[in-house]
Image (cartoon, rainbow over all chains, first blue to last red; front, side):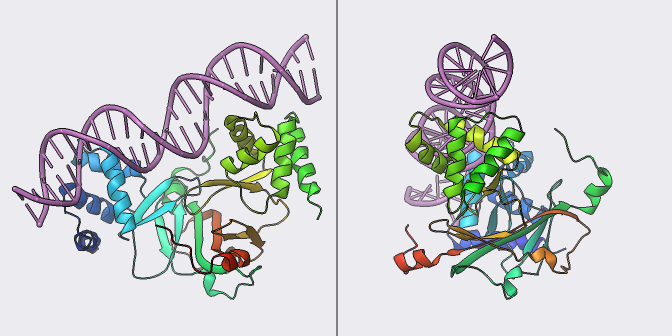
Length: 150
Length: 150
DNA sequence: CTTCCTGCAAATCGTTTGCATCAGT
DNA sequence: ACTGATGCAAACGATTTGCAGGAAG
């Protein structure tokens, strides 16, 4: 899989915006290129720490924010309000199918906004959000019905 | 408009769950019955304080949480991650059209899940989220194009 | 009366900021 | 060398918790 392309893209975006390409940022790109789904700041911190034990949380936050602002990452608040990031696919519009257990995320191209929606009011539409949450095949195997822990 | 019904419903739900009906909770129900859209904990706090100046933030949070857990309120994280609440419509499934300026919210019945979606993977679907963000008619009048403040 | 609810204060969590040092260009 | 990036510590905002007094049932 040409995942290295994602790394290249991210680094290119950073260079283009005048950011310096530090080792941490290189590693960050790699982490997102290899990630299957969304990553929380904490996830990123843990992963980055395996390579750079001295890395700090605020550096992670700073970089995640900069990368989001310049469009290299997509920022996203989960159903439960948790903040997540993922490498941004800039090539086409799509939505996400997210595993609520392992958070593995697949994309699909169907978009409800393509329909002729009969919306109330006369809002000027500027954005939308459509996500489907479920349990991926692997997680279904692992825990046939043990999802409730109270 | 039979908005008082919302108050009655909310109080009924609380009673049913063994909660005591305090003045604050009664006022809370009224606040949500009269709200046009989503309310943040802070919004609720401010509104409640006009009636009960001594009310505290944690009481607001506690009650919002309890009411959400027992289904009287719907909890919701906005696109920007902000936590909001609204009286829960238990009668039918619907989605929301939200004004990004004043947050006035309209509901509509179309649901993309009714379509024959061609989804990847073999996820067991358990939830979904579909919201449309825009600018309501009134807010369009008020600020024809002044939405960006940096 | 008893138990639950409230308000206060303090703790906690996630995220951001100021500053001195270090590394990329 | 210059300037931006990092790590540390501390600030910050939102939310939660422990506790003593007060109100609902």
